[in-house]
Every structure is written in C-alpha cells, then in structure tokens.
Length: 128
Image (cartoon, rainbow, N blue to C red):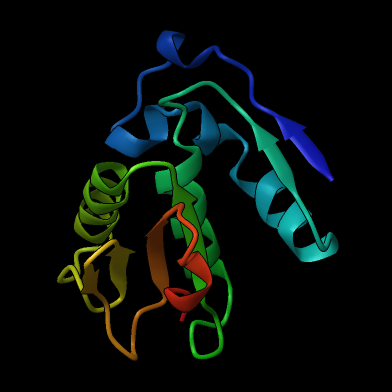
C-alpha cells in the first residue's frame, strides 16, 4: 500500500503538539495500511512526523509483547536524537522501551520495542 501526506497542517490548531504534524491526520489510514499490507510506503515532507509518530502509532495500537519496531536513519545523530524525542513522547526512559544502536554505541535492552538504527554495513547485527 501507499499513502501520500497532504501538507495542510499549518491551518489547524491543536492542543496536542504532535497533532499539528501532517501525519496525525493520516493515523487511522496508516494503521489500517499496516494491518492489511506486508509493505506500506508513506510519503511526506521532512518534518511531517513520519519517523517519530508512525513508530508510536504502531507501538500504541498493536501487541507490544511480540512487537518490535526498527527504524533506520542515515546518520547516527539522527538515530540518537529521534529516539530521545520518541522516548520523551512516550514518557519512558531512553534505552528501555525506546532505544538506539549506532556505530560503537548501543542504548537498548531486551525490553526495547522501538529501536532507531544508523544505516551502515553492520546494520543486520544491530537489529533486535
């Protein structure tokens, strides 16, 4: 499946700061797409919430006992800062439910459900 985000978020006013992101309006369509497709491609502008919000949508909707979400980033700083934001949004300590693995540093444990990874040649060894 495929979903393209609309860029009309600046006209709306929400109480939830994450709800202002374009991705928020597509939440139910994205979750339905995840359930009914093996692969879902979401296209949206930088800053639309694709990385920080979709991981949280999936974590909150599906069985977190068996769920593991892996999200790759092109740079180590991005993986580290995004994992910090997601852990803050979920009100949990970084390194537990939300963690990251970048070159020479792994801040995750056996309970990690959402893991941000730096794209590199050794990535397969960093996945849960």
